[in-house]
Length: 300
Image 1 (cartoon, helix red, strand yellow):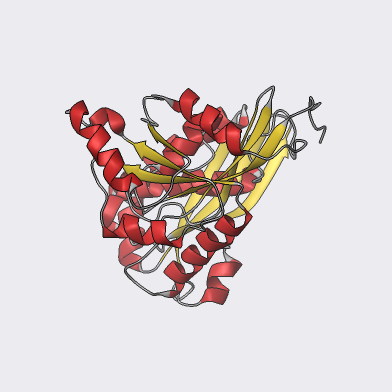
Image 2 (cartoon, rainbow, N blue to C red):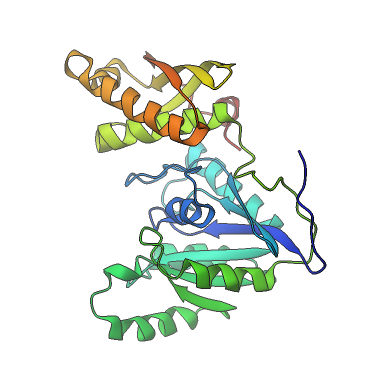
């Protein structure tokens, strides 16, 4: 890996993206780096891993860390592992982006905010600002949240519409330390293509099966081969019981075919070449009931 030349005053650091589930953390990171490296879904707990997205500009390298939504309701093994991932990320961050949804600041948001370290610069990012029809209420709402903590900046944005992301980037850069770049100029993530392939498939499973399928379902890449520009991916969708298997496959295999097609198209766009994809659905009972099992499947 060749690191880009850094001019005097070059800035580089880690930016933790935190908030309750479903406020648009993954969508925001993908929009900031200009590529889809963190999966998105309306289903809570879609992001389970610490995902790094990298953007390099002339004056700075931004290393964004997308985290799972902090879980405050159920103290099971998965949620404990997800919360530990968030906490570990915060301790290493140079800047924190605290994401909330425009017009909404409830107890779950406050619980996440209370966990943020006081000695790290924290920017309040009000996402989905385009959905707030009455713009006159944005300022009072922002002031209400700002009373909870001394934020270094407050930036309303729309990750989907890319509204005010340039302003957000300028605010972030102010608080990054002066450092040489840590990643190559063309790097967009530190995750492997094999990992990204599994995440893309998992996103499609949640998108097409929706609330019918438990969030503990996951994807295992059994084989990942590269031959020139071609990738051959053989994957297994792991579910808890036979009934869930039928949900994923669908009538005459229609749903699994749609999952496979959409996942392949996303992989080809991200990897920049053709992808041959085969997916099976398998029942894997009991694997998510303990933390050792979670670590074995890549949870951090």
